[in-house]
Image (tube, rainbow, N blue to C red; front, side, top):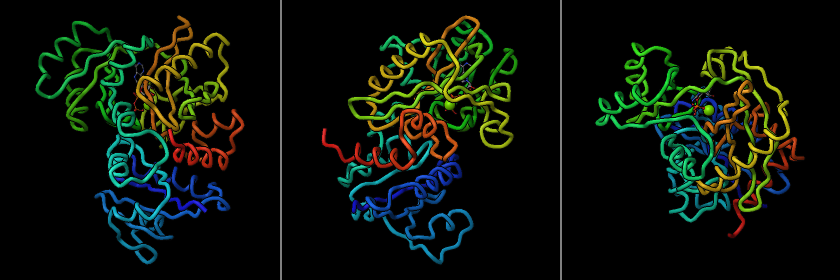
Length: 331
Ligand SMILES: Nc1ncnc2c1ncn2[C@@H]1O[C@H](COP(=O)(O)OP(=O)(O)O)[C@@H](O)[C@H]1O
Ligand SMILES: [Mg+2]
């Protein structure tokens, strides 16, 4: 039996989504192969372990958990981080696990940190010649000049985003110059760096799942049409008027193009294990643009990543087994 710990919760605003994802992993993981423990991270960053870890994070019930320190990770053969956003998907916990010498599922420090940063990842996608929206990113100090440059170089509508965020938190679609400054201020509330992108006329958002270390399995794209002005937090988790179509009904040549961009994007950020790679598709112009790469995608049973991997023959159980095997592979 491989001693495995699922780590979830965490300090990011995506804490509640992480709990849902971790529950699905816990439910589906193969108990004949893996001896599974739970490690919950509170919103303050404290670690608690025990069979009541879900209840603890959900309603504060401490009866079946005990507080632990990060030395606990050394007790396991492998860690499955099911954490979304900063302090989970951004290389921080991965760095701690490398330091402790414990293998873990998914991307390493560099890929996690790069993929989390929408500006740095765009610089690399540019080097890899993957089509993407025009963009500018800036620190607080560069704000005044950055705002001028953005208004000069980019066409409305603009998307203003915290560089290291997720779940659409802090993102605004700006249609007119007078709303631009407020959008930038809002994004700076979530991060010290902000990216401004030219808006694409999206008719469908297309997402592909990547699985592997070297020989990659790349799923066919799945499509979603947001129920809101764009794919907002509300639309993702509250109102959920999004329409999904898995696999996406798109021309074969678009699918081939997207898969090749996904492979390039995964490789250029030095991806390992898994990622969900998201594209913006303008059907009228028949153009695709890379949006972002998520190194720990949503993992509930209805999430896009497991659904796309199911198209490639991976049940949820088989998928979790494969991810752990990839984590333990020596490369
Ligand atoms: N350049 C863009 N053009 C058009 N729509 C965009 C653009 N960037 C983001 N969006 C919309 O905003 C949503 C959230 O942006 P995204 O960069 O994916 O942030 P997050 O990491 O929070 O998911 C996307 O799913 C899409 O609906
Ligand atoms: Mg996104």
